[in-house]
Length: 439
Image (cartoon, rainbow, N blue to C red; front, side, top):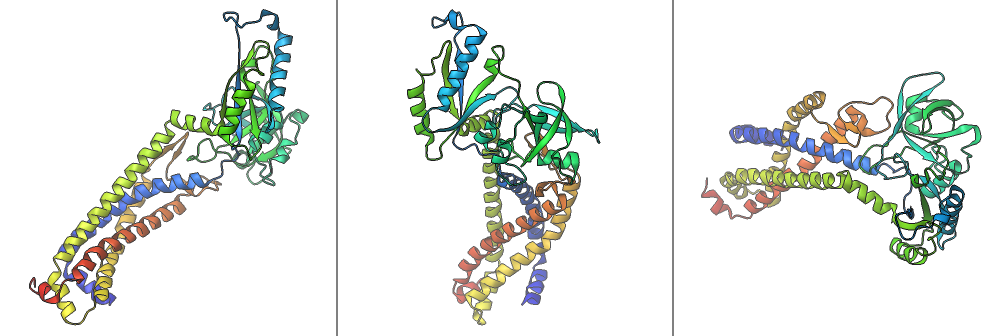
């Protein structure tokens, strides 16, 4: 049957040549769309590196002398710090709060803050520059709240139990460890970095799993070290972050917290300014950075193009089958069943697609080699470049190229088979006598 189909394709080469060219062009276009979709889905599937569910940020304000609620007697440094301590303690004691602590906000140290501050990490044995995002934290409560996990046992309890002040400890992510130390363990090694208070030596206390800034980006390297101490001078650089018990819903906690704590947190010149869930903070940041709109726009365009491509293929094969009504009638008159006719037409279309794959893949290869396809994903440009030592498929050019072309072939095979079956099924229902009149 296959030999017969090849002879049939060759006999109708005048029509099939144009279909072949169309399939080559379509394969290249769909591959570009598939490549981008694969990057998004792949990056989305990578764990965030921390858990922001049931986490909230409480921000405070301080009444100044220009307001009627200002209390001059509460405005000295000692009382300011005492009032801040009471402010934090009341939040820790609030119903359903599991853990809470002051958190340094400057330079985007908390998740989804939008800030982006980096440092260069060097070691005693190698001065090659490795860039990492900086995270300044006050204590192990930061890990209890956001649950950044250790790469050793995937637990947040391990980093939470390490004293930051002992040996001037720091935590780095696996990406930094790979780039800085290769296959060696970084734990116990001395590194140099600036995490907000100038260049210092740190001892790596633990290695954390890689973390992502946005859902659709690859993880990025980071270093966690002690933040500056809170004082009356920098008190506005901090907020209270907390984690609630799992059974507490977001809307319930926010409503109850504002109602119960607005008056209780009016301490000296401090007052409750706002409370937000990190889920809503994440949505706001995605909107502000255009991530949400970009994903929606690109998804809509991909669906639009795929629908148009599918309709184009349906129209092409519909016209092709209409021109063969006489042949269909003759085959049915000679005993071919409707199922046999449909299978033959579908096989012809799939063989044409398969023949078009080779020149299409060659075209895709040159497009990839020319680095024409580049997607800006946060501060990482996704291009066809293999990153040595990277565990991510999207940074393995040969594997990514194979997977995206395979996805393209399967997707187009489904569309072509469906596009052929619809007109073939319709044509096979025609009475042989009516079909033979067209011969």
